[in-house]
Length: 379
Length: 147
Image (cartoon, rainbow over all chains, first blue to last red; front, side):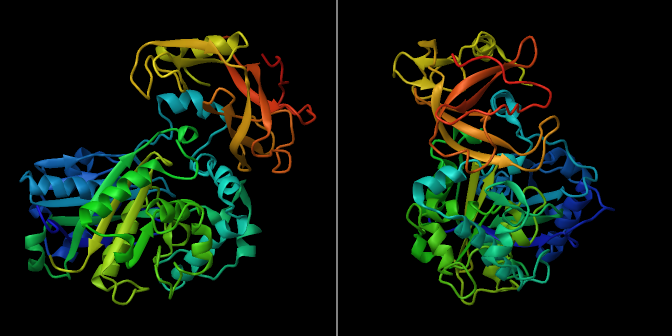
């Protein structure tokens, strides 16, 4: 097998994002799905494969009025949708289905008709939850002080991640927060879970997104500029953040990233645009290091030197990210939406001439990862 | 409160008796955590339960400022690395819950606190720093000594 086999031919977010009190979670799935179908010039009856997370594919399929012949309910957190792309590529290549709809939606803020959620598993319920863990803000950042001690990453460098992403958000009319901020603003914002201040934590909003993927040889038959999937990877490490092998690095990031880059036959030098799921400000730093853009402990400097900022050599999180754009709970879908916009040339903060975009997602704290390499260059 | 499962019974029986009981693989020789009846590194089922020293160091932590029912003020959520090598989540108690008092790599020792007839949680307190009477849970005192 050579060359990309999969293409994104439909991509859209929900019509509204932010605080949506009059729409249920399943309605948001449907809104994103119908927007993506319109984008692709398809109807729901053209869909024969469905993947989703949070909600079961059974629920979403029945709600949409379809009976797909292939489903994927992989639900390992916010990177589930990257993994769905990878699984859809395999399913389509194997002839199990032809046209896969991947939906995400979450009434993350308003909690209208939400699916039951749990941040605990059997083991974390016994060996993490009893120690005052109340959700992602009290778990996800746990490795960071160790990382700081071992690598010299500073509080200012951590805060600066949010500052740079706000610059990107300022160029995006759909971003929730657009006003410029400084490192001092971040460090003087309310403490959430030391060392994380409010502005180093993602938003909590309502919304969704959907992708439609099919075989690459069909891509030119659709109305939008084809976006090819060059490669992909997935990985899992542990549902317990306290049991990460290395507090300065995500094993799931390393496995998913290495497989994605190898299957796409690219190196870091080939990447023009990068999305790293930023539920909290440290995640882009781990992503930059675990994907190999920086040596261990150098990502703080790399962002400080404006490499990922507007005009930099590696534009990253150009929609403003989970920190400033939106974050409904499982943000991976929005990272890929921005990758697709960048490859189509339609992003609000468009990176001129970008040909390769990488989306790296994280899920269930550092439990899982998915990575997809997109390109607008025909195979 | 944790709900013990068959493979974790020994751990919770241990804390009830003031012991930190961790499994060690007889094939690789390494301790591992959380409990399961085989070694996650080599799959050997030849494992034994042994009592840890209860001493370790503060590996990493957060200080939660967003509140928790029954806990007064900000509190640490920590990972302790035991001298024997395994890491576990806990709280650092009997000291100020501040970055100045919670120094990465500082030595700590286990203290046990009973919450119900079946559940006693292992907390950790500084070894070299002066202790203060700062119960984690309102209305309770930290009782029990380091093993």
